[in-house]
Image (cartoon, rainbow, N blue to C red; front, side, top):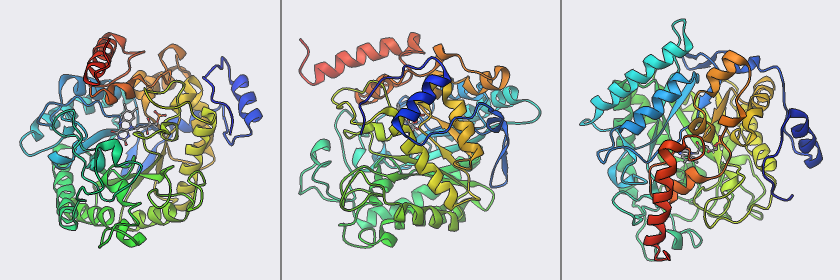
Length: 458
Ligand SMILES: Cc1cc2nc3c(=O)[nH]c(=O)nc-3n(C[C@H](O)[C@H](O)[C@H](O)COP(=O)(O)O)c2cc1C
């Protein structure tokens, strides 16, 4: 373990020196041509290997349909030239929304979705030219323990009790768990949402299984009784059944993707992907088995994530310079956190060679991310270079890279965690530093309101 530090590199040699002094595995390749090669996802050819990862804005209308801010976000991403746009978390049932403004596709609002998608596809075609456009994948979710569908009050729907996490969502040891019957009922909801997504014009859907939302936590529900808990087969049942049900509903050509947590960084028996005796030691056995199972069930695109963004080690999910409120300074260098995410992607990609993996963890590297991305693509460590916070800050990054071979450092994400803070303060989110005209006023108002709610306003 090494001291946490902020990003302070003005050239690639300084970054190389730090990587060497830390002894972390992280390669850089100055030939960035691999970023611009086509990538096959099922029968779709993505025009390049740059992916905008799902980043929710918590800013849809109350009925789940796209607001002006949502449209603006996807228009900017599409104009920005990414080869794959992985649309944000979209709830399959109202009670599973993470906030009252989480995206939700329904028969009643599907027209607004198709118009939004059509407009952004047009911009993508214009940006990419020559008959190209990006792949659009919609992430389907149920927020489980982190459901907060109505107000500022959590309304957790939990697959298991967890002595560390229960108090954090106001759940008592007596709170009833999500029943097997309830979980059974969700399978059809994933299938119905996927069918709608196909009708609306998406190229595929993702069944979200990361960040300790419902399906992610189920993967670790070793102590849950019944058919969704205990054995690996039971813990993966909802995900597997949902994939199969979606496939039956949408036919063979529609892409089914899965973004799953490879490593929860949460103590055994409540966490997935780690050693029983040490929560910081990765145990690849079950994550690899899961990836192979998903491939066998017809999943055509994967992305790894890790950690629980709601707990005290968010650097496992997204390496940062500054944390959001209440998060301790990590006990590791951000380059170690970045390298950990890269190593997970590589491990899974090597196990499922014909299914492309979208990697993550690139944003902290700022203007140097293309060199890490190119190195990972070249070595077979991933097929897509996935960009989360950087896509909020600098949606035109792929286009700038294509046109000039470099990025503007002044547009890159500064890993300040203000986008996360906005979510934690229950507000619409975006990049406070680089999109400040819109998000700085929202940020300051949200901080004030959160302080008032907590009764700490002086
Ligand atoms: C504000 C915010 C919203 C996010 N929304 C989603 C989401 O809807 N679905 C998802 O799978 N991950 C989500 N993430 C995680 C990112 O996709 C990504 O995994 C993470 O930020 C690490 O990548 P980065 O270092 O490129 O930012 C979100 C992260 C942030 C900070």
